Length: 253
Image (cartoon, rainbow, N blue to C red):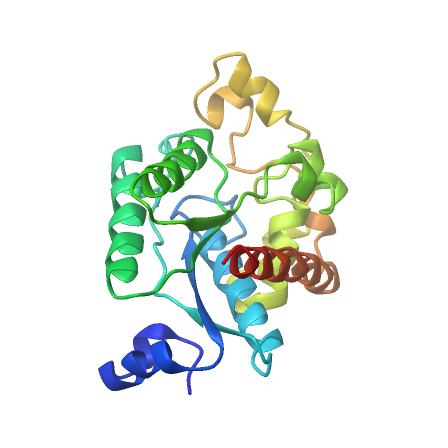
């Protein structure tokens, strides 16, 4: 059986309700926005999809949990990148409604465990996801969310990620090199100078887009230092975090 929910037939989905293993549905979320002159617009959903695929593989033979990957929600709030070609933004209310509607639809069919897997960290986008999880909880739908920008999770990720200077830098570019290397323009990547931008500090100062933050090429961090090896190592940590979140979600029953 495929690891992807949408690959199944309707009778196969129905059979999940009588299976011995508990089904957990992963919802990959991201955004379509510029990631420097070297990395693809779809960097964020690529990372979310990569996490989900690795977790599904790791838990494929697990005796207790069966993980299936839902079709991704690839669009997000992209106000910071709106000045660059390729940014496709939606309103926070759209992100909120999509996640709430999807989780409620699945819950109505008897799927008690849906988990949001997000790798786009624009504050308005993250807040929309957090609010969606709260809305669902208020309606009796318990939905998991691996919130990677929370201190406990971030502390296990790379130094660049923790610094906040990591948009299309070494952290994200390494992950794409590990999963979709053909989408990274390495000829451009190796010539990009490191650019330190305290993105949280810039946001707190009221700077609302990449150019105002000094990111005139839509990146910060050190993309030239990115490697597929680091990307696989980081995917390993992200997979650990998501597996732990999946098990914690099921354990609440």
